[in-house]
Length: 470
Ligand SMILES: [Zn+2]
Image 1 (cartoon, rainbow, N blue to C red):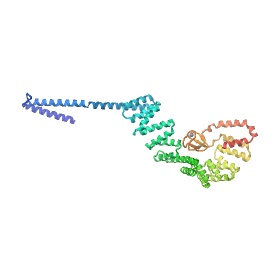
Image 2 (image 1 turned 30 degrees about the vertical axis):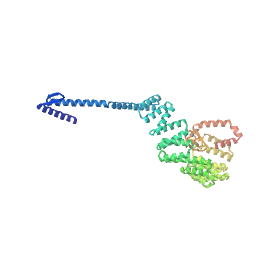
Image 3 (image 1 turned 45 degrees about the horizontal axis):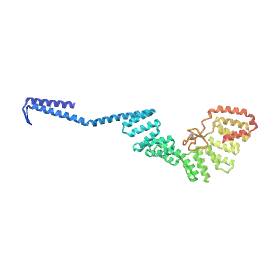
Image 4 (image 1 turned 180 degrees about the vertical axis):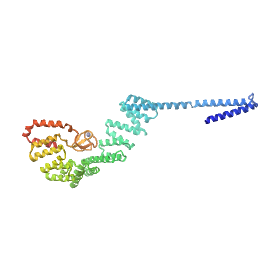
């Protein structure tokens, strides 16, 4: 609009000028270098205009030619950049699709077209890894690690390679570097912790847990649990090194971090007893019995009265049970001690209390009943009936690895089969329940086959009971 206005204004001025010139043609006389020009003012103006326009055109053409190389260079760079980014994108798509050949082709193309190593090196490394060329990938990662802007990516790539190769020492070192460079990264903190646990660097692992909680990668409950497990392990190692007071201090800290953590309570109590503090040792067990009664705690309570007779031990367990007197574990702990002390009446009373509270008594109750029937009444037939029931009943709880299912006699911070950290849980092993009918049939078959043999040798039932109890 504004342009049109100016154009019209210029046109109007020119028209007025032309009209003025036409009305007043005048005379122009010029003599220069022997030439004589005799003309009107209109022709002179036309000549000046022609020369000006010609000069403007020449200047414009000269300018275009002069800036041509620069413009061509820029156009070429833009074109290369565009194609480079396209190759980069296609390369990433190929990596995601698992097409190694295409990924490498596009990576090479992107490398040639783009002068941006941070972007292309990662793709090249991934493409090399995809085609199984770990050596080439490692070179790219090393180059990335040498640059400030890609250091973390390079170290992270090398770390993954070291983990895949099973080189734990190198992996640990790289994980530490990666964590120092980027401490806020959840994944690296997790990897660092796992490597520290696997290599037994418990103190460092505890620091990693503290940092993870501080950086909010780990909630405080999980952090406390992990620290308690680590302190438990540090207590074992300190005890192994003969540093008993450190061992006790670590165990106590673990016990205080998670109330109800049976292994820590057991360890603390045993170490206290070793230090001659029997009363304190007992109070640790009594305290946890309120929240989490567990057969191993009752065993420790019996150990605390070492040197005492079976009946005195039973009374100690009975006292412990008062801290949670209606719990099945309380009845079972008393029953077990009573059987050992041949206090049949007490044993029966507590076993019946458990058996009556459930439709199907557990394997442990059945075994204790078998022991009772044989011990109190020498009733081998009833005892064997209970053993048959024990074979098909819900199996006893045990320390089970929640990752691989491994059953372990004692709780340990790391599964001895799959090396998972803190994976052991006290629960019923997941097998057997479905096999129950088959087991029942098998028991029946054995029963028929060995009927006469069993009658001839009544001790066989008691033997079986002892074996299952262990
Ligand atoms: Zn396991």
